[in-house]
Each structure stands twice: as structure tokens, then as C-alpha cells.
Length: 254
Length: 190
Image (cartoon, rainbow over all chains, first blue to last red; front, side, top):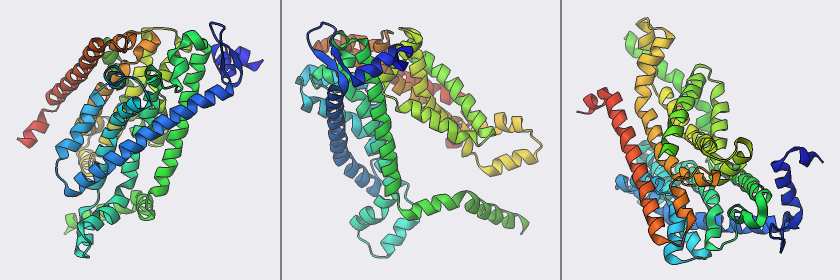
């Protein structure tokens, strides 16, 4: 009864929970079972693409950041990546390689790589050089420095990059039905079967899924932040600034 | 084309206003940042279609969505740019007897310009990409060409290349504007 007052939104919410006859009257659509199926495929596709992209891009970004060269490569991938339209990229793969889970996945991996490379690079470069020198002075090998000193300190930034990728991949997986992969985009792309209620319902679910994934990742990001960094962050605003000001003052008076 | 430029301009004005407010009243900062980040998280296709039921089909819906996406990119950079102005400079300006308003417009904003323009550049190229989905809101654009027939390769390639070109051109325009508005940056480097 309350749903009726919400207009198209009430209808859409009803679609999520209850099955109904399709627009053409031939099959049943909607309901929790179908929405769950679509959500499951959607998440499977998005997570697979993000994981593969992370496995490829993170080590590369860390390595580039550690040796501190090819900055051009790390920053320009993200510039180029931003300019390439997501729609164009996915449809390009479908048009030239054909439909299927794997092809969409590859397109989404390409979409997810740039933010991860850039953030890994920037995160590693942002580690205090004195800390790295101290580690080197303590006799750590380059590999140990990269993995035991730089990586933990850069992890929040790196996770930030993966988070950006995950959110944009979930958003873009909406057009995967163009490649016959039935994600939550199916009702959006085929309103002639699912009706406008189904279209709107899928939109609402996609938005919820994205927010949930984003929130989950934010929690993960916090949990991997080394305790020391959190302490430094908390102690900074008052402490550091006061110290900075007082040192300045003493220089001026002398 | 129009779909990209109009949201950029509106987004720039709104985001800068928000950032200035947050700069003046610092407790607003986290609130605004949370709000614009949340807007950015909503998937674009869903955003278009949900708004469709509120504002109706067409151009206005697309502009609202695209503006919402530019907000976070521009806001974050304006806020960071203002924050990173060295405290010494503000102190010096204060010591020279400048009012708060003068400090903002003559010291802080000019110092923050490079960061602000960087945000504008990022917003420019990503807006073009998201505008590709604007046909879902019935606003046409290059995306409609791609979506009309995904198996027609010529169309897909042509529209994609045009979108990349448009993104690049917009970035170059912003870059040129940045050079024009911050002549002192060049003087420092040269």
C-alpha cells in the first residue's frame, strides 16, 4: 500500500521482491530469485576483473615506484585510461572479439588497470625517503625494502586505487548484457521484456551493490593501514604544526 | 559536446562555491566531501535512469547527472589547493593588513589555481566518458551511435575515437586556460 504512493519507485521495489509476467506475457520476470541471479553474475564478473587487474597492475606499479623511473608510463596510463570511454572499450571488444564472459572480463580488466598502476606508483613514491634510507642502512635488500617497508606504508593508497577500479568496474558491468552476460544490466538494456519497473529496479540494485562494495572496501582499506600510520595521522594536526611554528619563531628571534 | 561543457561549467561553479564555504567554515568540509563522494559512487547508468523518473527524459537529466560527477573531482582539488597554501604566506598577508577577503582572492586562490586546474582537467576528460551513457536519459550524444548497433564495427570505432579526441581537446583547452591564468608559474619555471 505504501509502495503505491511512491509511483514508479514503488513499482520498481515491488519488482525486486515479487515475480510478474513479462511485457510480452510469455515468461515470468523479477522477484528475489532472478534479482539474486543477476546480482551474483554481476559481482562475479566485477570481482574477477578487479582481481585480475590487481594481480597484473599492482606488482608493476610497485616495481616502477620502487626503482623510481618511468614516471611518464605510470601517470600517462591513467590519463589515457580516463580519456577512453568505458562504453566504447567494452563494445569495441564485443564487436571485434565476439560475445562472452571472457571478452567482457578482459575489457573490464583493461578499464581497471590504470587507477591501480597509478596509485601503486604514487603510494610507493610517497613513502618518506628517509625511512627507505634507514631500511637500506639496516642492511635490507631492495626486495625486502619494497615488500616490507614501502608496501605496507603505501597500502592505503594502493587499496584506494583498487577501490576506484572496483566501483567503476561494477558500474560498467551494467553493459555486459550486450555480450550476452546476464548481469544486473539485463533489465536495464531490455526494458521491452522487463518493463520500466524492472529497469528502475535493476538501477536501484546496482546502486546499492556499488555502495555496499565501496563501504566494504573502505573498511578493508582501514584494516590494512599499519597501526603506526594511523597513530601518525591522529597525532598530526596539533602536534606537528605547533612544532613547525615554534621552530620558525626561534629562527626569527635569533 | 554540449553535454560535456555545460556540466563542467556548472560543476566548476558549484564545487568552487562549496569548497570556499568549507574553507571558511571548516566543520562543513567532511560533510561536503562525503556528499560529493557518495554522488560519485552511484553508477552512471543507474543514476541516469533513476533521475529519469524524477526530472523526465532528456537533456536536463543528463546535465544534472554529469554535473554531479564533476563535483567531487573539482571540489577535492579546490579544497586541497586552498589547504596547501603555506601558512607563512597567509601570515605575511595578514601582517601586511589584508582583509580575509583580500587574502582569499589575492593570495590563497591564485596559489591554489594549478591544483584547481588539475581537477578541472580530470573532470573534463571523465565527463566525456560518462556522457557516453547519456543516451539512457534520452539525451543522445556519441554513446547513442555506439549503442545503436554494437556489432557495427565502423560506427563503434568512429564514435569511440571521436570521444577520445573530444576528451583530449577539452584537456588541452583547460591546459591552455591554466597557462593563460597563471603566468607567474611559467616565470618561476623559466
